[in-house]
Image (tube, rainbow, N blue to C red; front, side, top):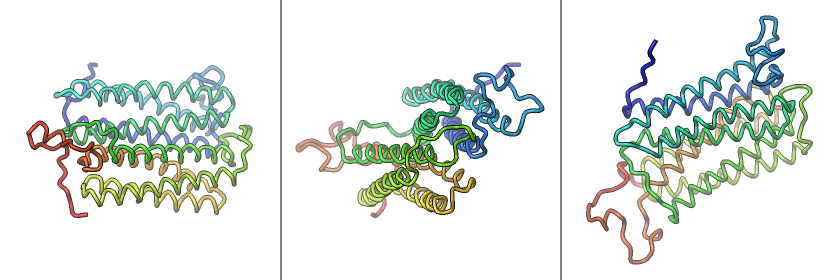
Length: 325
């Protein structure tokens, strides 16, 4: 049977990059369910499952099947990533930035699988579990960038280094990643080890939870700042993106504090994980939207003009119309 790739159209580019993003978010959920149900060593071997078998035997307990489903999702992600790369490299006009991102995601997924194998072979060492999670967040970042750019193929990806928007984007992404990283430390010190015999970091759970909360305050503060900036510059795409980010952060805060004060119930912890992935995705979209904010006078050296004016074309890099701030 001959397999036919989707046509290299703008619509298929959007669909495939969205599939890449959703699949990696789903991996966060299934990985969380493995940990929360104590199924982390359901398959105690790698790359096989148990007793040299690649797939669970019929008499295997439910924990084995839960872990096996999470492992199997990795192969689905590879298929999606490979298909996306093959389609994007045939786009016309060519988009080497999208092709490169699809390639990085495709290489990152098997690397993530290797880290997962090390995690199993080390008996769910909490530090390898943290690395496992944070690699997924990098993949979500790449996937979110890909999806956003695929939705706006008519835009030119601009180099905005040195501008106010660039520093805002960098600060937002750093704060997001710091918040998520400290969240893994809180998890590594908490009760959900993934297996009754798995070790913990030994850090004081209250202390690392407080540090995580401090990072959350930093992230929220920066998000509010970017939201105000979006209103000042009046770019519709940026306003929508910052509004979505604030909504996700609000939901994450409600779930996070509720789970902390209710003894970390499994359903709320699972929701907290998914929302963490959505925070990574939405902050990435905000950072991407910041690329297309027209250069403000304060952003440019004295005596220079925007690139479009220097070319004398009068064209813009952004097709979203300004709205009233």
